[in-house]
Amino acid sequence: MSRRQALPAPRVERRSRLAPAEFFREYYRRNRPVVIEGLMEDWPARTRWTPAWLAEHFGDETVEVMAGRDAQELPDLHADRLRRDVPLRELLARFDGVPANDMYLVARNSLLLRDAFRPLLEDLRAPEGYIHPDLREPDRVHLWLGPAGTLSNLHHDHLNVLFCQVWGRKQVWLAPSWETPWMSNVRGFYSAVDVLAPDLERFPDFARVALHTVEVGPGDTLFIPVGWWHALRALDPSLSVTFVSFEQTPGMNTCWREGWLGATPSEEHR
Image 1 (cartoon, rainbow, N blue to C red):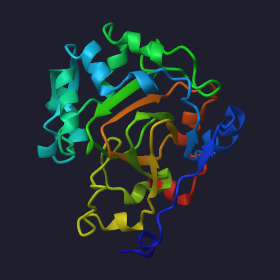
Image 2: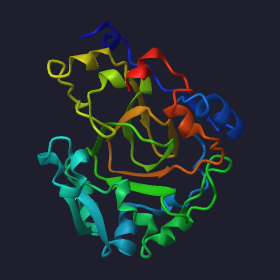
Image 3: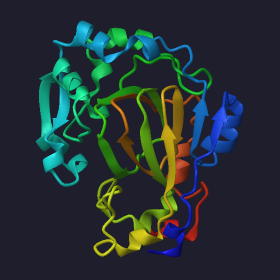
Image 4: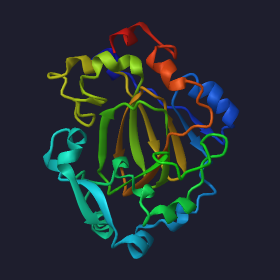
């Protein structure tokens, strides 16, 4: 193991009631992750969307899940093969079992855009000053739902993401974009390394990566900057909502792609 991985994992900063102006100045524009407390206090979803309530009101509605994930190495790379339609109550019934990664409702479902589920948008609030208030535009808001044990393995996104934890807890690992040369970027935005059990004989460069770690719980909001590698594992049955339509987006994603944000020499090898 490298000296970097032997050191304590860097922690992600946690802030309470962070003013939007400071958020954009200190984190969004500087491409730095942060956990923000207090942005979800006015969400009806936090108390209304219990598994029992969802089963009662939407249990017979069909949802698209990724199923059979436990039998597939790197299941996130095989979403089309694992796609399956099930009644929502079938997914919710998994919440009482042992932790497993076998069935997961992920963002590609675009659940909140379907007519049957659009009423759920009324129970969300775009964090004022952070996110564009119109949530009915396509792809501005997504939902993630699954039992304890679901894992989104190491990947990065082409957009900044505001990750909002409605209920349950998730363990999150993050690494900045300049760690990309050591991430075994096997295809697209994904790493071939299993974050839960890295095989350093197969992927020796991963020993150089200093992963940031943080746990997010109910009411926590995590800013995941564009380009940052991240993995998320549900410690409990979990429901999360993500936003990508930030109020101030003056070419920030383009800036990252062209290496203007916090660039280091290693980013030349992306």
